[in-house]
Image (cartoon, rainbow, N blue to C red):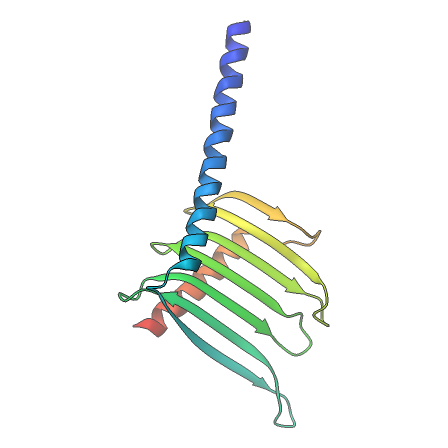
Length: 157
């Protein structure tokens, strides 16, 4: 009986170590993408105008791609009238979401409402870290990333 318990504990420990290794590999991948000099960044901006013709907000989308048009990172900065400003960061490996960081600010932009990181292995969520009580569902984050990825592919073609 003791042997079975020890074996189960060892297997559990090895599984948890494997998950930590995967998370550190994802963190290393994100750092490598941010430091690569061979990738090109393009910016697309959409402005929202108010009734007086003044620009009142908009969306800026930053895409980091290689020479073949493969998307490695998309950052979306969203600031719309009467809404909280938000920043979304998505990192992809071969069109598969690997890492996401979601930050949403209060209406004045002085404090965060949502501040979360998501680690993925394909469609499977490996870990979600929330520094605020409010959070975004991991499946919603994955779907939003797919929207931006599809949009990004259309603009690079």
